[in-house]
Length: 121
Image 1 (cartoon, rainbow, N blue to C red):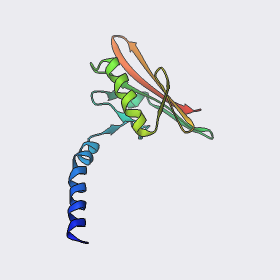
Image 2: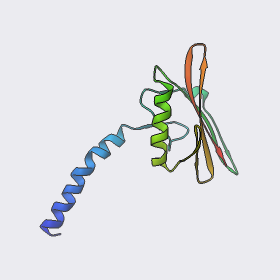
Image 3: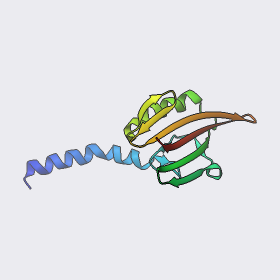
Image 4: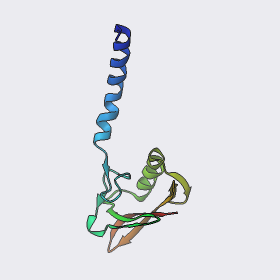
């Protein structure tokens, strides 16, 4: 490899290092490991339901908002999910290939929860 080629390769590797370091901090839902878990949310894995059907996977996962504002969660997923191949299809709903992802927010006994539902289209 020429010196110029080595310099270009080194430049790209150095430029990508922050991206790789940031990606390693990303957490994902346990049952949906292709859906990032927003920082500040705490997944309640005891409430997770999963089912594989001939038509595709069905996942229901719950996270405690833990003081995170609902609108911040909505904005995070509206901005983040397209990077994972999801297309916005309406209020709190996304589609990707043969799946639909729906988000919901629920309050129970003063605690706020964020739900994601993934099911075949």
